[in-house]
Amino acid sequence: MTEVLPLCGGRTDEEKAMDYILELKGICKYYGEFAANKDINLKIRKGTVHAVVGENGAGKSTLMNIIAGVNKPDEGEILLNGKRAIFRDANDANRAGIGMVQQEFMLFDRLSVLDNIIIGYESVEKGLFINKRESEERIKAICAEYGFHFDLHTLVRDLPIAVQQQVEIVKVLYRNAEIIILDEPTAVLPYQEVQGLFKAIRYLISQGKTVLFITHKLKEVLEISDTITVMKNGYVSGEISAQEASEVTLTSMMVGREVMLHLDKANLEHDKVVLQVEGLNVRDDRKIMRVRDLSFNLKKGEILGIVGVSGNGQNELVEAITGMRKAESGSMTVNGERLEKISIRDNRLRGIGYIPQDRLRFGSSDQSSLIENCIMGYHLKHLQKKRILMDYDGATKFTEKIIAEYKVKTRSGSDPAGSLSGGNLQKMIVGREFSQKNKILIIEDPTRGIDIGAIEFIWHEIQKQVEEEGVSVILVTYDLTEAMTLSDRILVMYDGRFNRELHGPEYDEKEIGLYMMGGGVDEKGA
Image 1 (spheres, helix red, strand yellow):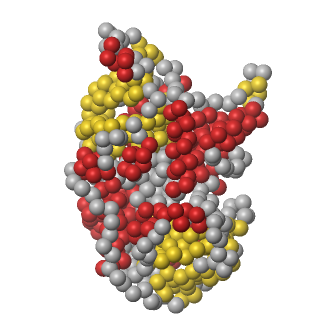
Image 2 (cartoon, rainbow, N blue to C red; image 1 turned 90 degrees about the vertical axis):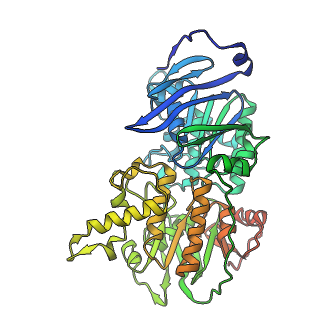
Image 3 (cartoon, helix red, strand yellow; image 1 turned 135 degrees about the horizontal axis):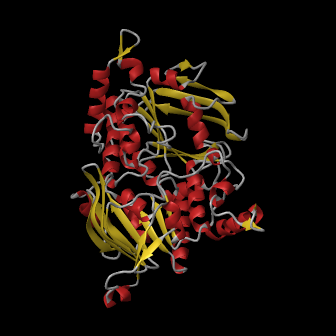
């Protein structure tokens, strides 16, 4: 239960006039000697979109978790509508009208979408029985109003990550939150779905709701926000209205310099085929055919972009290529060798690296140390001593190299991976895969949830892998800007097939978006 305490002296007339729904005063959060948040003062005006931006590790998610009742501040106070509020847990904050969509989703894999949305907030009939029909009708009405589309009876574990995010947003709307915190809400959404989300946000604001918007995508910040707060190293370093801000202004406030998100790519010849996929058919966990008679190739030193709206077979395609899922039929050839068996371990030994979209479920072990996470795959070739013994000194040095070169903010390589922020965990995974001298890299959303400075760094690292090491890359991404900036070729995936092949360097975002939605389908495929 929320404890609301009287304020000494009340609010000033000026504060009352500005109608702040949420105020933070002197918020501090420590982890040992490390200050994740230090003396945070923040005022959020009711009925606005207030963005909070900053580099990875700046303290944004920690602060949002304090507002949402997930963490408790060590110092300072929270004011809701001018009254001091103390949240004992997240349910307490929910009841006070604060809902949060976490960057790493808080869903139960083995429960249905419906059960995930209503859990703890079930409609009860006769004081005893759960009325799922009533809840389902209400959820369907919310989905219809805001343009979300998913099956309420599907298990969450069977949903693509972009659809899981939609479920999280609907869950918050279902709970009637007055303040809605969205932590990296567009990280896995294509352009069309981002615009749908923005339409929903604008509708929420028109109904008097308040949105806290956490993101690294500065174009989106400028498009949707009213006010922007910049955080750096646990502090609030500045605040500016969206009307006065620009990408250059915000970048300078965040990073201290201008960031250049473009690449001067070398004009390389791509002749030799290093990977050939033919006639691939793949079913999902419900035995639905998601990849349909798909054929394509990847050439040496090429970045091949694969884009599409979530749920059109990209996940199943990647799982089949990496050996995470068995294909129904089809073949894969690597450097002229037709593979009789595709497994994760064998792919590692062949020099095929993988950066998964879901960094928690597939990319890391959150309870294991950074050292243990960094040597995953690397140990097969490089860290064996006398067959069964591990070269622990080599493992430590390899990890320290990744932490230093990829600017992973951590106290020690012995810390658990779960102690990292989402962006720093992503940098660790990228560093692990880029440091193993792989010849083929399969990359899904490499910059999801990381700051603009880290995006610039990772894009240039991908370019370096290709141009200096001769690596070939399959880039599966929901970020069209990323796909268009990096890719030599783009394949657009729709309904389990490629319906268009486009060649760079000049691409048209609207044209790609049209093909992603099924327009202009080429029956012959790519």
